[in-house]
Image (cartoon, rainbow, N blue to C red; front, side, top):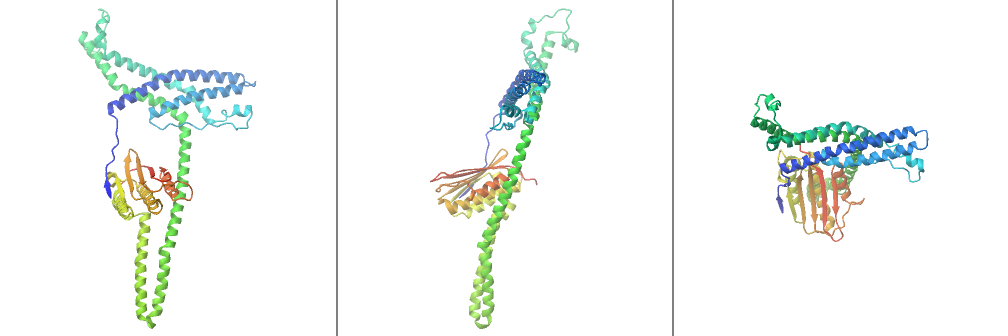
Length: 438
């Protein structure tokens, strides 16, 4: 049983999202100046004291305390960055002292950590960006609030004969209407552009923080992720090659050996017993057909032609149609359209996950029904396989799901398995929804 559905992701209304982001940016910029002042005072005082007392035994402990103090400020800064720069929360892994280290070993641990010095540099430089951003944002808020409400308090302002309003300087006249019109227009302009100004100030200040406080950690995390993906890819390919070799050895290779023996026997029987030779040739033809069937099945497990030609929904529909138990299939219909098809590597990985999971369901789960869904959620592709079997599946080494986990990790995704004893089993895979480049 198959069905298709288009996945929809609920989104917030644009005005509400804009207001929420404005409040975050304003809060970040306004809190940035006090934190910058605290940071530069701590950094300057700590470095001055440590340098002055470096000839004594107090210099290094004071330096260590200073580095720990600016680390706290850096962590506060990192709490803001995900909401301001729309990035995942990242905290560097600081060098920790050896458990058996003495006093000086513990005191020198942050001194030997490059990230501690980057935190200190951020404490010194944040004020250079935070102060102008604070002044610009406060000025823009003042222009917006004072301008849009100018009509309320214009009558209370002194307008003597010697005073000259801005509207008069611009040639708009010196009347009340001209003053209200000009100041209200300035206020509306400042109010409408306030989100852009606040965003620019927050991104400028946050860019400095990201470069110094999380840049090295992001690079390290990226390198670690790429190394893990490389190992997972190599492991997945090795597992797939071993499985293919085993399947070929146990199936087509054995049939081809028997086919060769049958043909040799038929050649010997041609002169002495033609009837028996005919029966032997009929068996050889049957063996040939069965071998071709097995080879087609193996090729479908590697890269079925329907996946390449018609996309993931059609390939999964064909896969579900060959299932030994009823399979409910729910696939995002847009994944099969030319403009919505995924990158071939992602399509192949998703197909491999579902095909291997369904094979495990048929062999080991004793399930009576199964549900498969594939949906796009933003930049991620969600794949799920549920069955009502006996459970007990896990990602331990030596089990069939290890190859699936390696393939998913190699593609930059994650695999989660929930399978308590007695069932049911839920397999969830998240892959990057990279669109195919035509």
